[in-house]
Image (cartoon, rainbow, N blue to C red; front, side):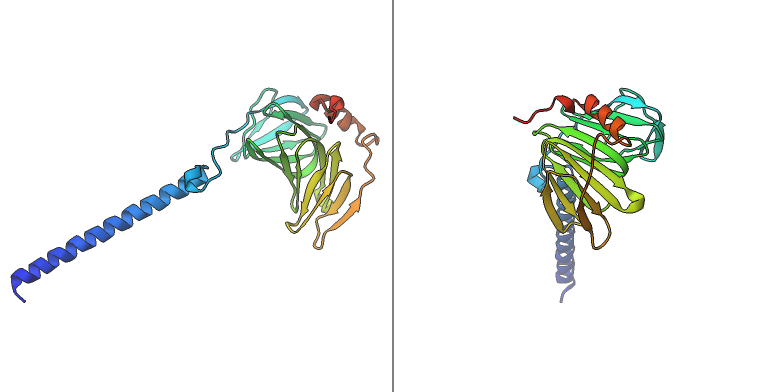
Length: 236
């Protein structure tokens, strides 16, 4: 083969390699762009669409409430804005009342730890690591609450969860509503009455003798009903 033909062949090989490299580059660029777009919810990339975040504000604090924001801790105070991903901890004798948007109201008892997992429209999810919580919501703002091995969702009305983490027991307490409960991702049921769930494996579900007027909890629920407006709630 002549030198001229060899030079021509080398030139063609070089051009082919450049085209292949360029095609690979644009493919990787397109793939990366699609993955990022899907992560942020763009429908064209397979996401579920942009969901605006609700604003969440502290309305009242009693005692000391510590809030962890990305590893930095600060003391909560009235009118503070709460953000997705923050971890809220109430100390002995402390309580917290805050709102998510205009229709979801949350009361947190003393010695409780709550994680604000998601605060977007139609996707409000809170994780109760320990303690007692009371949530009141309208039918247009479903709320999901999770513990270590349970998941509870309500569409309207009120729900209280008590996580006795040291006993591996969760109390699920619906008020004027039905709650969808999932245990260990494989056992689901609907309940409108209070139940206790042992988060052991296998799990155990029993009826609860919960009484909001019991001396040990009456003060919290009386306060929570008042702050959230649940006392005046009626189902039409």
